[in-house]
Image (tube, rainbow over all chains, first blue to last red; front, side):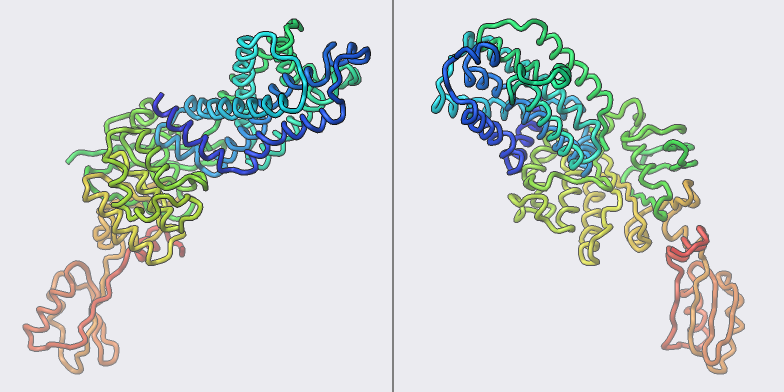
Length: 249
Length: 300
């Protein structure tokens, strides 16, 4: 436990010293929020929006979706790059020789992801509430619960990517690709109702789509069914495979 | 004085590549033990198996009385490691690294002392990436000893250092030993092994090919020393009576006596006793390099 807290604290400081990851995890979701807010407007729900945006206004749709998105950007871009880079450079080997466990390494990544996701989500909500008029969360405890689940799940997914991708460059490229695919198809970009069938099939297997649905359900008081089960399944599979393929060098 | 490391018939392969064929050695408490050999001889694989970082395919291994495969966690808490090809994050600060590593394995001295001892006090808040090669090495060694380990592994710690930094590093290695730890030093530098090590295992082609003190190795494998002096017409046949002398040759004005052991002292004493005190009496001793060439039969 002591190892985990020390390691998490150092990792958090290191993370904040990397300008690229800070920009990506904190600023990019904000930029996308404002771009989409500008494009789709902030009108209250009209006849067209009854069909897309799950029957609510665009910003009421996007704000909870983006709370899920910021978690994904921290976990899917930053964690794999950081983890693969540490292995590539021999940092993990150094930790291993000093009897740091794989659990501590993974746990520190989850802890850092949780802190950054939380900061990023709070920033996003503050920015959004200053500019847009969207409905408040239906159930704050439900939103917090989903946020915690989404953070742990995406962190596991990010650790899997970091475990199987050999270098920091590869991890960054693949992480960004996965993140953009999820962004466009996973309900955080164009509304899913306007996607083609093929796109929606892909969306169905991306964790972000299910994370967005869960977060919106909690926020809007809706029930979209089995998303939580699929998300937990993806997360559990990622965790098992991530620890299975984890290498110190 | 007990053995801190006992290895018998260690073997390790990666797929079809044989990294270590057959390594047996023992390391005694309190010595600086050198593992010397050309690149690719199996040195690093051997010490990584001993540190519990890799699993040996075959062989009996005991390190500090523990099995490095089954008790790797316990073992790693009691040893210190400076690894080849390992690093720290560029942006970690020197003090953060020491603070972190000292907390991983509690029980060592305060890390502030270690920081000063290894001459890193001025670099306390510098980031790892901004340190020079020598400073990075010093930090690695500081991290290896921050938990006051009984046994320290140093793998190619002076590779890439300039000659000045290498000398400094040698002093640091002696300090570790003097502080009571046993040191296993992996190197491919002959002068380093000869200067520092109490005993040396020479590894070539995945096996131990020789194991002894530096002097013992020189004595055994490149034993012949050569003593030369000028003697004009002086008859030196009496030198043949000295046990250590193998051969006497005359090269113009100079006499060349080859032999073993305390050759210089015996020859010198005999010369003086026979009324000759040459001012140019010299000895050329074989070095570990000669031993190495003799044993491995190839130029490095």
